[in-house]
Image 1: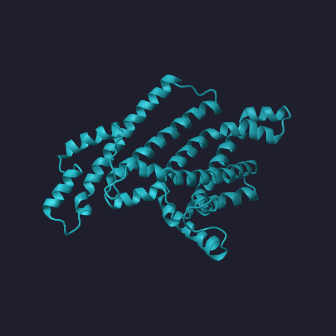
Image 2: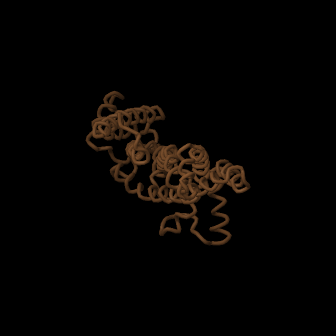
Image 3: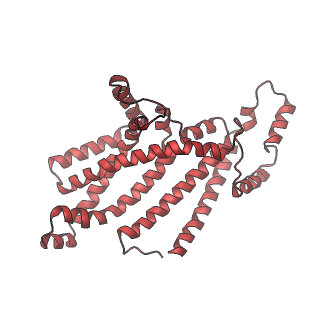
Length: 305
């Protein structure tokens, strides 16, 4: 177990190094930060001084080596615009993004798992067909369109929830449902398909032959095995939302780290972009490790090689 965790951590470090290297190359290929930072009235000498102060006058290879050293020491630089530590700015925004993603995943679980169980218990029936139709609809609606639609209905028409900003839990209701809608559809389909397969297994027939109630056979025996592919999808969706909720954060004017990263990319403020990528890569790594460990809890037959 310890060896497995150590191996995964080493793999995570290599993956993060690769990610940071790719980001460094792409940001420098995107354009010259001095052309963006320096006002038009700045002289050539002042531009050169600014580039020197930021270390941008060094050869690219030297910038890369210095950059890796700073990352290893946890010094990710300061924002070109605010002169604040990049990592501090990202972590300040991380809380809003995590609250939004956790709320969305809770909503997706509360609706998606029961819907999948109900559909699996009545395959081919009217309720199953209705849920499958709803899941297709949920997978088809673009996030930006759904967000705007929810604002028009619940904020503008009925004035039930705020349409923007952060203050209390009511601010997260509409963005959480916006992000959760697709996940509800996805989880419903995953649970339904996996559970139908498990309910046809011999151990389920044996449990039923022993007289166990259907609800016990379904929830205690079949559902546990059906959760294995679901856990993988849940972990991937959680990680994807942490780094992919930029549209929802923008529509609802939430000060999350995805909006911060988007603004930083537009300004070529790459210390913030790098800090953002490292945070996302670290969170994704932890989520994947948690998913792997969850396998052994759900299925004792899973071993760590």
